[in-house]
Length: 321
Image 1 (tube, rainbow, N blue to C red):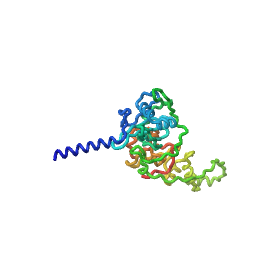
Image 2: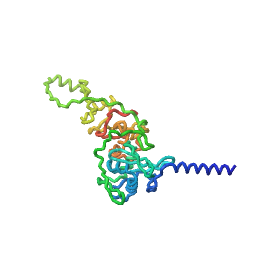
Image 3: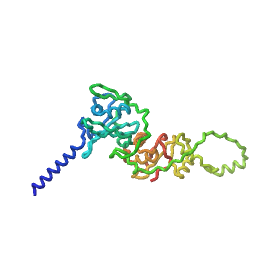
Image 4: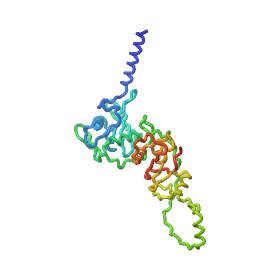
């Protein structure tokens, strides 16, 4: 019985070894595998991430031509998967994009990398990239076939309208778990022309009655300022009384600069959900965290005010609890 158990264990191990050998494993700089976000240097071609991409570009013309046209990434991440091919990610921080490189072995045993994307990266990955990436504006050096070559870091001219939000393991935002943003109304706005003030002569008796009775916020019942709140190009500050009316109608509180002031009302609220509700994109949580100088964005407190910059707003209605 013991011999039988030993044989089954040995056969099982051999079967696992056979399965793993069927998939491609990265042998180029294996010490970089599963080490998280690796910044790409804009000063040195002999940094690990630069050397890895240099060796792979020597093997793969697809990868070489892609980086030559798209530009060098700000960071990479090499991932080893047990029962699947290894892959690596190319991160572009300013464009908020991530590309996935999957291997393809050709008949002559030559390796090509198939680039997929662009996709939307996870906001935590963007935060890590911001902390480690080289902020220099220089072109990025690579050592290809013994010669130092420079790839542009410029992302201008890249069409980002075709970004999709499909999942790639845990690297992509799970949009289904975020609150749904109400559809935005399209309002045709007229050019604002200030009206001339008409001075009317009022009798002394009328003045006395007006001094006794407290004037209302807007005696005519005009609520045009509510439509002005939805204008995402310019912002006209309103007084506290009008702001109270707007909040009672479901609008978010605003400061004098037009920024939304969101007050945390539940322990379950996250910065990603707040970002998705007001800006339409979870990854903007990175910029909102920086704008508010938050020390621990993962632990929001009830009553804490979060400012959402006016330039990022897509929705000005209050976020539901």
